[in-house]
Image 1 (cartoon, one colour):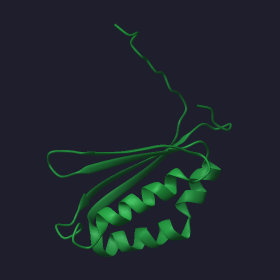
Image 2 (cartoon, one colour; image 1 turned 180 degrees about the vertical axis):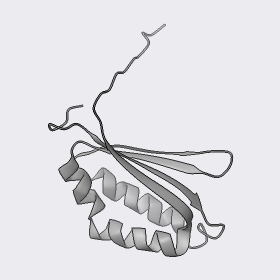
Image 3 (cartoon, rainbow, N blue to C red; image 1 turned 120 degrees about the vertical axis):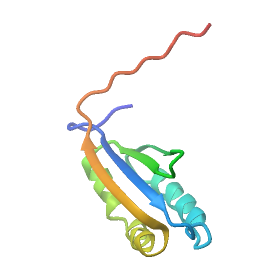
Amino acid sequence: MTSEPGGFVVTTFRSRLRSDAEANGYIELADSLECRARSTPGFVDFKTFSADDGERVSIAMFDCERHHNAWRDDPTHRAAQLRGRQEFYSEYAITVCCQSYQRTFVAPPD
């Protein structure tokens, strides 16, 4: 995995869904957007986790700010953001960070 100077751009999206989000088409739209994001130049990774209290955390990573911003400004993504505020989320918070350091460990096979 390599990145342009400045490092990877990591976005965390913490959210809570409204009780009617699934009935309003959330799952279908989320799946479609994930496929679109994965085909965007510079896409590195995307994962979503759910906590017992209903909070969800999605982590998206792009290889540089330019590619991150292209995804942020994608017209289909922008339309989905508006729909999210109107139909899906009771609350959310977005944090965008530029990676300055990464260390990894992989245990050797047994």
